[in-house]
Length: 76
Length: 377
Image (tube, rainbow over all chains, first blue to last red; front, top):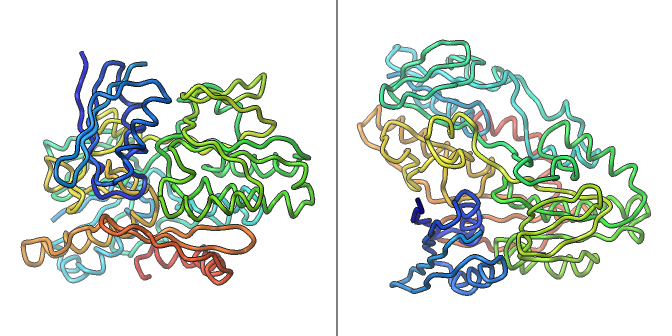
């Protein structure tokens, strides 16, 4: 059964939001959805760039207040 | 009050010593007892492994007897925990003993898991253990030229290590007079050459200057040992003659086995450093799931906060401090120069130009660590 997990990577400079996402993506099962929370302005472009290159699915991306909410699905 | 520290690494040791001094009178009056359980009677200065890999430190310089680093009032046992029973406030150890506690600190650290990447164990050199660092040094000595590839697993301890090892490799081959015969290619998991933006901004022109090629968005998927090719999750590949890896890490097996946290990382409150759902359990260093560097430095600053809070809870019934995410990392930048990155949850690092004094400060810190881990620095 697929899971939806939230990764709180707000206010982090090292290892940073994308590195956190990659960590949790490795632990996830195919079909799982991960929501990444980030206050780093670069995340909105960094995450879709990696997701596209590696071949997972970008589900949604929106900014709520000062926090980016990016949802991705593991596809392989 | 029974305080149990599980793990005798940097974080656990600093915490136990700091706490022992803060609670000296309570310990004398037998109101408080501090017990430490560790897997080893030796304490390793892990950052020294980078120097061992280049023949600049000998392995025996990395160790001290753990008991010699602890305040005498700390009850120390080499007896690793095999079962955590958090609902009953007790742990069971390898020897079969049960230790009950009122307050528990889990500081069990992390371990490399190169086996998660097919071919990485057989196909690459690394420096995250004494044996592998010595092996890497011998391999470097024999290397006469060719393609060197550096790959980085996720997550990994010491996020500065990938750039440090790259500068060190350049210096090493240059000193041997064979740099012109060595092509160095650096691979990194995200879209710039370091996760800290200011480090990436600084390191990129440095790599250009010393002739290091780089490929970003490269998450190592497998190593074809026979054909000497490393492949990425993103579909690219690099040929190599010598592969250097920063292996992926996990928390300790007992953490995963007892379902304290996925991947061996325990869900932790980022300010109080308590385990989620357990107010009498604190988590330190690599063991947390916090979005903070897995380094001795983070463990050090976290340990000071936890020690102060446990002490104040005993003395006045309330915690007095929050962890602000502070980390301080030296960055060896090659050519006997170094700089540092200091940051917390709110403030990014502002990198200074590398200089020789910072390098010699780092070399001094390699010795001063033993004062630091005693909680005196």
